[in-house]
Image (cartoon, rainbow, N blue to C red; front, side, top):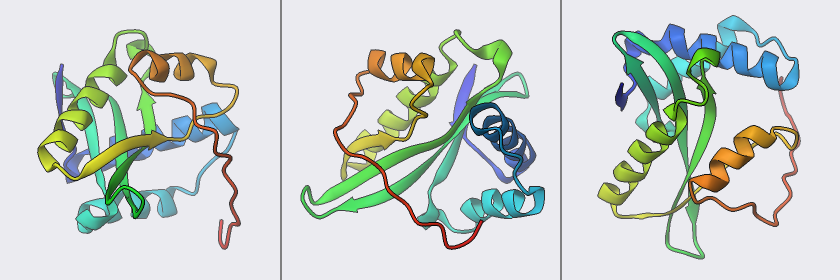
Length: 150
């Protein structure tokens, strides 16, 4: 399996992954046009982040998005791991751990990353176990939000 930065040619796979993840985890169907524009926007503006994919002989087996948050407390960047999706047939085969290792290697090369964060559904115990196994810890923060548009 080849872990690599995603390319514009991967947009359709990433859109499909996001659709599948939203339906699987939250029972939501996302607007396809909005979602595709949102995924494509990452490729148009590197300040938004970057996607990483697991490519298995031309078949994208999984992917994730990394976005950035500046920490004034640490004078460094937190990289947020988002939009994690692994095709059902690839789960339990260390696809995510390979993606995450790739992200950690890029962060080490960048030299200004102070840590990694991600959101996970409270009920998704399987994913939580994977994240803990890879060295992540549950934080004591709660997340609040106010949506301005859907």
